[in-house]
Image 1 (cartoon, rainbow, N blue to C red):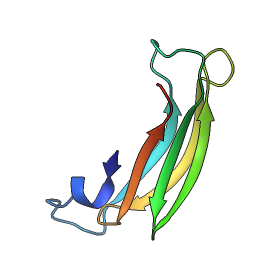
Image 2: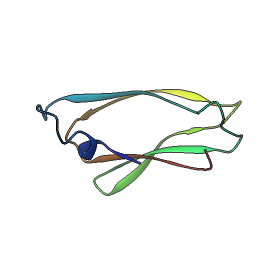
Image 3: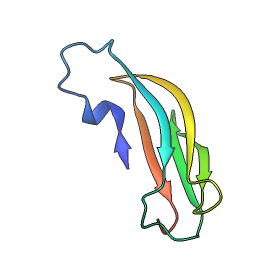
Length: 78
């Protein structure tokens, strides 16, 4: 998992924006589903589901404040 606020805690400007523009599978991924999730405010949301030979990448257009308490994670074998 990756927590945006924790990983960017040393930034001088807390009003910096981070942009997440895509999600993609590693080339060694198998055919099982991989769920890309984000957690914010105690709620977890699935951003996309990736699967080899079906949906290996997807475009996203997310903007987050660098000090925002948001965690990205993946579920699945990949």
